[in-house]
Image 1 (cartoon, one colour):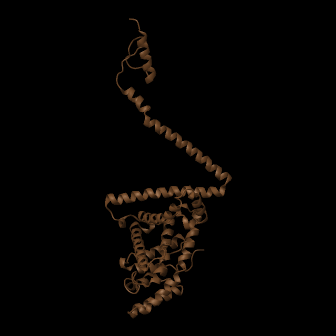
Image 2 (cartoon, one colour):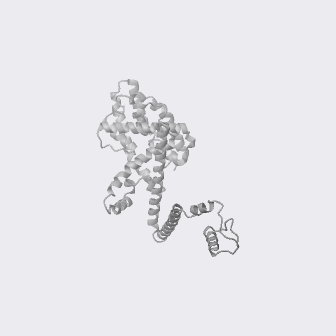
Image 3 (cartoon, one colour):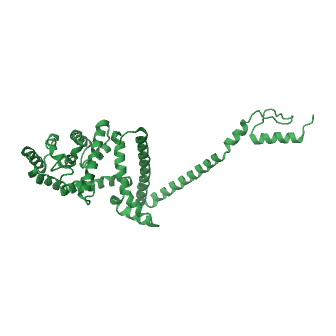
Amino acid sequence: MALSCRGVCRGASVILLYGQRPVGVKASLCTPRLTSTQSSLWFVRQYSPSEARHGIGRSVSSRLKWANEKYERFLQRRFPRFFVLYDTFMKGFRLLFQDAKEIRRIQTRVLTENIGYENLPYRELEKLRQFRRDLLKAIPLAIISIPPFANYLVFILMYLYPRQLLIRHFWTPQKLVEFQGIYHGQRAQHHCAIVKGLERTAPSVQDSRMKSRLVELCSKVRNGAHPVVSDVHAVRTLFSGPPLGVRRMYADQMRHLCPLLFLTPRLPAFWVSRRLNKHALELMQLDRAIVRLGLHQLNDAELREACFVRGLNPELLSPGQCREWLTQWLQFSTHLKESETSLYLHSMVLLTVNFPKHPRH
């Protein structure tokens, strides 16, 4: 039988299309016979529109990455000081987005597993606390940058006032230490006023024994001695009601306590007392979370941050001194009741101003 031209063409077209000779086609025979639809499915998988889009996306992404790396090398070579600022900003945005994803994951877990925030691990609780504060600080800057071309002004302001306008994600490690020293200096200006406020309140204490203990405690602090935990616990009943309860103390005393937590004192007295109570309870929850985790699980950076948040300046302290002080603090705070938040706040002065007697140089 003669081989028709049509049969040869059809066989050749199938071979070219699928890249292989189908079963049932011989070099000298006629019409091909496909054994299954696998070859056509393979063709569809290899050349589907979705994979083509992914391929284009990867190509564009790789080119953008190459261009960005080239731009960064140019800045680093020609404008090294500006490159440090640029690199800090880029890393800050990446860290901020990572934190936002982590916060979303934590909140989703709290809702799905129906667990209270107070039962979360320490690191998750601390991340929630810090992210909330960072967000409140970043909102005004975001509002200012809404008008057209206002972002250029915002960039200049952020460069000139990084401590006031930026959050810690956009600070270099050196700036973080520097700014923490400035913040601690600001709250240290109120230490003397807080101790004097306790002394002025002492005459209004009815119990003579408690009055003498309070005066002795204030005198010890003013003379440069570091009180032990039992000295503070001895006057704890004075701080759960009048005259030193968080809702009973004088307004001036409350306003002096606000800088300890970096809160504004320029609010009505009832609002100030409510905010002080809320933030003190938050820190007490964090203290209990540290106990559940174990103090030995914290690294040096976490130790320093925990000490700084609770009123101590860790800049001149060694990791061992930070661990020693935080151990004493947890022994004090974990025995407090929720009604004793005022004592917690005052102890951020009483247990920090004279520690240690001989700091590390």
